Length: 222
Image (tube, rainbow, N blue to C red; front, side):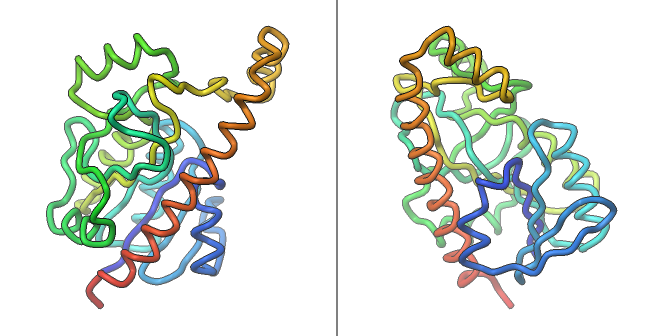
């Protein structure tokens, strides 16, 4: 079984690359990283780049399934930093047999649904409203687009997301580029300590993803 893996950010999969030592090459402008049974691509943030990368990877490497992986924000406080969530994206269920393999790789993971949003969701009330409206437990910016791309190519799909922030412990910034971060620092100088805490959370989350991919490799059929 070959798995195509789409992450938005390099730091989401950097520890995984250190563990698996993939071979890298560029395909039609997209940097791809092969470590059988995986082919990884880092798409960039948002639905459009994620969908584009997923379609290109599907056409170039012919995987059996496509995974949307990376960081997410919890919508409820029964989740905490570095908790792993396995499942589908709103309206796009996970492929059942792949979900079972993923659960075997990480029995402590939460099986639930992710919802995709067009921006980083930080506010407590906004998160609560999104949870009530969708029934999802966490939010990201790419999963639904990757799911549609997988469906369009007749491939299986799975979300593998790891929690960074929660409603009671939100991010210090939306981190929507240099100027956004600078503005947050200028307006709220005290956020520098919170940003340092966010960096620690990112590290923990990325390491949880690494452990998952190493474990899943041992569960996949040849």
